[in-house]
Image 1 (cartoon, one colour):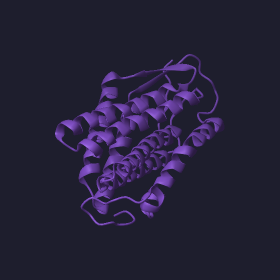
Image 2 (cartoon, rainbow, N blue to C red):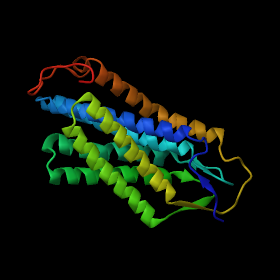
Image 3 (tube, rainbow, N blue to C red):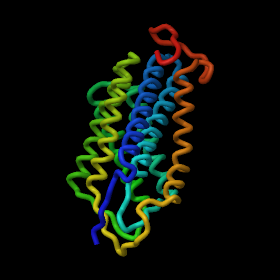
Image 4 (cartoon, one colour):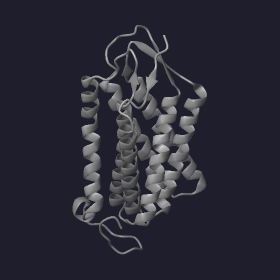
Length: 259
C-alpha cells in the first residue's frame, strides 16, 4: 500500500530552521577557510581547515535531521537506527574535510576545484541517503531515479560553489551572501531528494503521524552537532589566537572577529 508522505508536518517551522542551520554551517566553514588561507604555519592552517570542515559537515547534517522532523508517513510510525544516523554524520564531516583540505592546500584551479566539489557533493548526498536508510518503519522506501540523481547533481554543484567561495570570497558581507545562497542550495538538495521518496507500507496503523519518542531521539542526536556549531561560532567571532594558539598571518595584518 502506497502511503501519503509529508515533509511539512510542522508547517514552515522545520524548513526555515533547517535552512538557517545550513546557512550557519556554510558561514562558519567559509570564515574558517578564509582564516586558514591567511596562515603560513601549516599546523594552524590545518586546525582552521578542520574546524571549517567540521562546521560545514555538522551544519549540513543538522539541516537534514531538522528537516526530517517534519517528515511524516500517514499510517506508520517512523524511527531511526542510531548507529546509521551517527555514521551519516561521520560521512558528512569526512567528505567535506577532503574537499576543504584539497582547496585549502592545492588551491582553486578548475581541475582541483572540480575534484574537491565532486568528492564533497557525493559525500553530502551519501549523508542524506544513509540518513534515510537509518529510518525504520513497517514498509519500504522507493526512489524515483531521475529525481534522486538530480538531488546528487545539486549537491555536487552546491559543493563546488561552496568550495570556490571558501577560497575566493573574503569580505564579511560577501561571505554572508554566499552563505545564504549555499543554504538555499543545500536545503534544496534535501527537499529534492525527499521529493523522490515513495513509501510502501506493509501494514497501516492508526497511530498518529508524529511521536514524542521520535522527536526526542532527533533532538538528542542534534545536541552534539549544535554544540559544535556554537563552539565554532565562538572561536571564529572572538579572539581566535587565544583559542587556537598564536600563528602568523600571510600577507594580511592580524584582525579579529569575522574579518
